[in-house]
Image 1 (cartoon, one colour):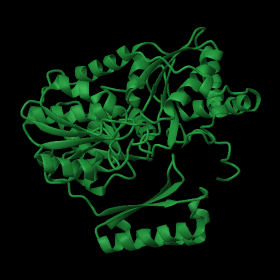
Image 2 (cartoon, one colour):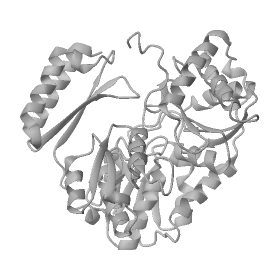
Image 3 (tube, rainbow, N blue to C red):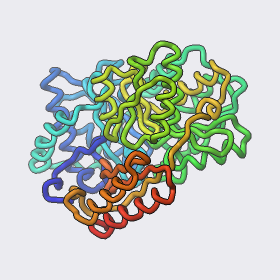
Image 4 (cartoon, rainbow, N blue to C red):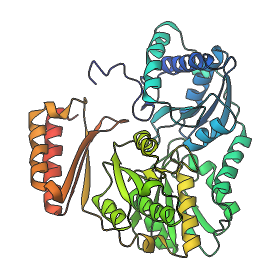
Length: 454
């Protein structure tokens, strides 16, 4: 980490780190509660905050510390317990909380955790707002002694809030019943495990729930949206019609067809875009995707009379472009799907229900609905880095990128970026030629590894 970034707390999706280490050490967490509480007091004399968490063992003590800092400022704190990230966004808006706080590291391993912040409107706080909080957090961390988390009482969870979220999801797809469908749902031993059993029970059908026994350390472990091959294999083994798989905080969803195949966010965007267009709901016949979305999606949408706009990676940046262009649909290849007529943020369970509703209404399976999506060969190589130095300032890396761009031109794409939540450089190459794709991916990744690798 460079000296410039050493004090940076918020990434593209809140604060994220190894639990117990800066910036998720006790002092900084407590300071975050103080800073958020002081910010909210400027908007309301008696502010209230809703907290939610995923299943990591560190979630409880992080929540207790945050709550202590918030209460020190006179802020009322209510806990929804273990719920998906989008549940907190929904509950903040529905019940008039001044903010929502999610304690989760999404798809990261169990050792990590994070803090995501939502405003009273259910949208993630803007970058500018988070940056304005940083100085106050650093100030409190230097001057306010954090209590020992072991001395703090655990938060008392309000289970009625979880039930309220389930009712919201059901209300988004009125009339949906899963009769005559056999479905495998992988809950990743994460937040979905707290909601999916009751949700799918009320929808009926034959739903086989997998990875619903979290122990604090098995979240995302060889399962969930980062390991979709698991649910794809289970669909084939169980003779199911389709599979659903969620990440640790259940804000993304990836599908599996009945041929041991994975259907990612690009294909979900294609299905949803065509359906919304057919129903006259696709504003401007526009979909917002990201720089990582496959060229095949763009081509398939074009054949359906739909334009595709690319935003930087990160659902907050997709949303920014959607709001700018008044788009009704956006999302990421990873399975974050944004449907602003239904929710303010990506919601994996909601995405699953929208797809299931489409299947039920059309009588077509997800394989048939996406059969004309011709995917260009694409590879993503993750390189662990010790610092995030601008890549154009590293001659060997810049030269490797330039060589790839010059050769591929109109027959492929080169996207190199740093992860906003991990110490990784992501090398994505897409090309008609698989040989050229692999050659350039290895060359660029090798250059980054040689110059910045751990």
